[in-house]
Length: 181
Image 1 (cartoon, rainbow, N blue to C red):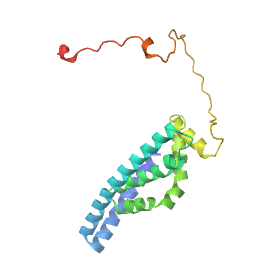
Image 2 (cartoon, one colour):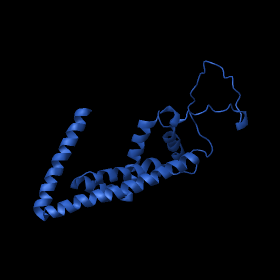
Image 3 (spheres, one colour):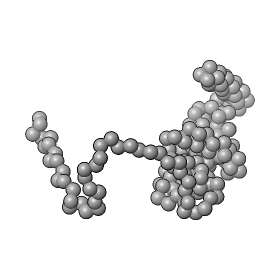
Image 4 (cartoon, one colour):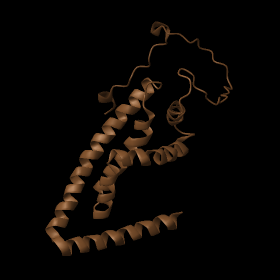
């Protein structure tokens, strides 16, 4: 796996280098520098905007999972974030691919692949992605089919569960930082 990644990165760098040379020879170095700086600025704007919206979508999904749109959470937003990262990477080819990824129909086409990769990678770690993918299958609202996990507690609990904060034991006093010095 490592050798494939290294080969892809090396070939990407070679292709980007020749793209810089070709565009620089054809249109001048000023145009190449302007394109690279412009793509970096656009990448920062896209990345900030998409991450902010993605976190908002995740928060909404966690608060109300049955009315959330899983296509935004584990589909189109991650594709747009990937496009923002690619725009931040200095390169003409990567910037062109990133601009293509920002087109909504392309995001809709790439989103299922991204969703399957995120779900596969986070299936055991993030139950949110599993719930979001279950919701996207169109099951009954209000019904979530979850595989149960048995949790064994070696020692029985001696404390009673209560909603009354007055029944909790008092908090331990905090040490004064000024006295420690």
